[in-house]
Image (tube, rainbow, N blue to C red; front, side, top):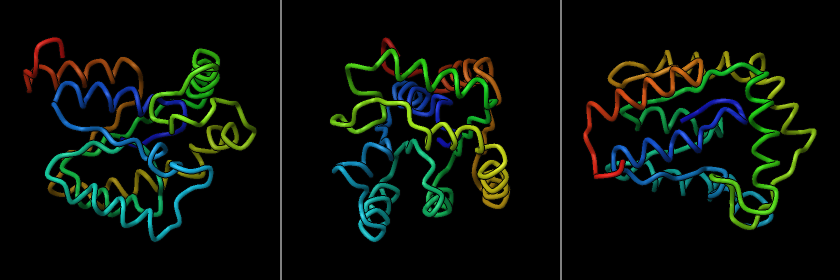
Length: 171
């Protein structure tokens, strides 16, 4: 599950995990287990352990290790949402969860709005989107690549998954 900050990767990943009965791992939560991110070698080793599992859903971008995840995945989902929608959702989520932890974020990390993250959202379409689309295209053989461009696309996708994989009650 990849896409710009604020697109809803964690929320969609959690719902998908519920529908399929697959454990979801939030990369931000894992990377920021301490007050600083894991060193690159520890991070690569941790991701290696996760993608070696039989079934998994990983939520997050982390471009340096994206290709390894794509090669190991049977499905890649890209939330390709507009900048305006991501900005709105990002700020709204920070306000809603201002006193608690945000889904997909390490429990001890406080939700905040920073210029750096806002800049990532604003520049995502020019700075990251082209390389993500290229990586998805280059690694599409033998796996399903799903590009969702709106919340309506997400709802349709989740309904399709639910229809294809009737899961546990209440899913």
